Image (cartoon, rainbow, N blue to C red; front, side, top):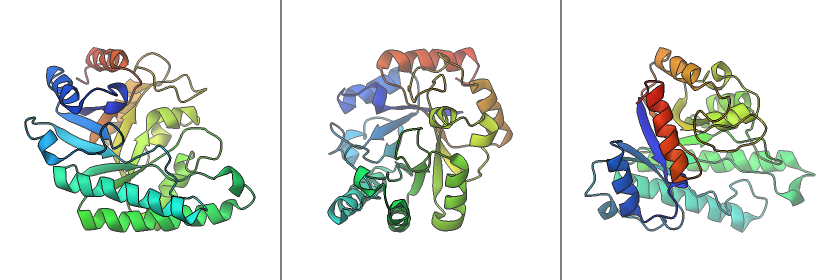
Length: 252
């Protein structure tokens, strides 16, 4: 299994220290969140390490479904910058969050859904132009988030966008989906791993709560999944705990 680590748990370490940490753990994959302090990286930052990179496009202050044109368009531009960087550094997966419903747009959610679809279609075209795969992520159970329902995301990708999917199993569990339900789509080409007790999107270390990770990996093996699974937890200590947990269940 291709196990990666997100910079979420290593932030705000310098990228060289992050890469050295991945080497020290004898891992081959790293996911970089394309925000400060990792927002001005180049190919040279990775040249001395034989590590495969995936990118997570910006999340902070970004809403590709905003009803404010300048915010929506700037958000699209920020995600496209991640596609451009991915092309330059050889990262072939870019995680993208769908939009959310602004508080001032609660009276016309269909308009926001239209903006979200329009933006994701533009982004899929941009990803194709840069030769990378956009993987749209399912969201946690937060107010005004789009695509908290994995079935709705699966249908949307099949019928409208034709991109890849990032399945965040913590988000799926938070929304009450079983491992079989959250891994049902053949468009899943990227996976985020963290643990929670179902009540909230905690991003805790693997094995701390009640997500059935042995079942998840059993399903992935049965489906011959050959893409990356990213440990996306909050702290370096939780990254190390998660690595130890994966070793304990014979995944690493």
